Image 1 (tube, helix red, strand yellow):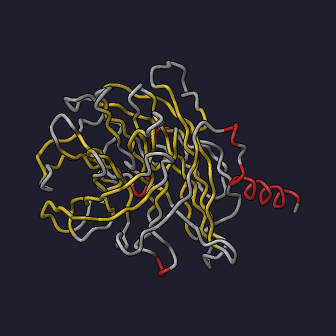
Image 2 (image 1 turned 30 degrees about the vertical axis):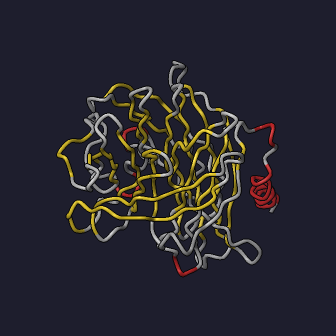
Image 3 (image 1 turned 45 degrees about the vertical axis):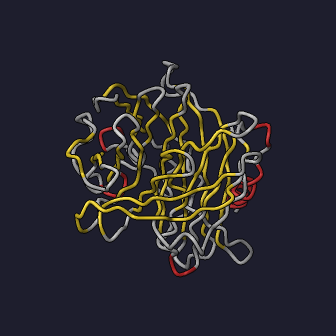
Length: 326
């Protein structure tokens, strides 16, 4: 009983992390029912201005969407989000696209697929170019629902970064709802020629869950590469009981310095928050996408996040967006 009480107390406190413990300002989440159709939005990347490419992990046809996201230049809050178009490669079905990155040198888009565990290139008409990231041999074939989840590219550092959502089989056991194991991940980088460059060992936080769940996910759901070589890592733990009521998600964004040779990587907390679905709160949001947004008038950097609503599951969930200001 004492253990359960302490666990509950900690979960309740997650939403109230002291501001001095974080280096980012977390803005309120919002949804846009009139301009964003229900979807499974799992990644986004800025093209320029207010234009972004967004990947849906369960589209009718393989491809990506174009969104316009307007940001308040003073506060960094989202003023509006709207989907303005969709582009398809012509291939039926889906690769379970999870991460997306705009590749400025070639004016193309790369998408990581969790089904095939490949990172493929598309032109701005949505067509496959035939190129892909040259993944190391440790990524060998399908890995189920814990394959390649994230993707980011930075034109200043000329580096792609990706990782699997959970621990590779050769690296140990994966976290589940009851075992309390910390996932160990490999953050992998690639250059402009799509060649593999390096790996950073990364250890996630200890899971909060201590009870079995109907649906459970604990992993890194996206990465975001900054101009100075730092990398933001989005850790997401989702716990959904059999009857859904009482479901929660805890999100943590950490910053690591990719130039630091300390292993495993040293993490610095950027922002931490909890969403839930119960009789009081209905803000449950499974954040899976994260990218660099615009720079504000005072020089601060905006980070934009999107949540996967599972096509607004049961007409209860929403396609949430929010920002963090660094």
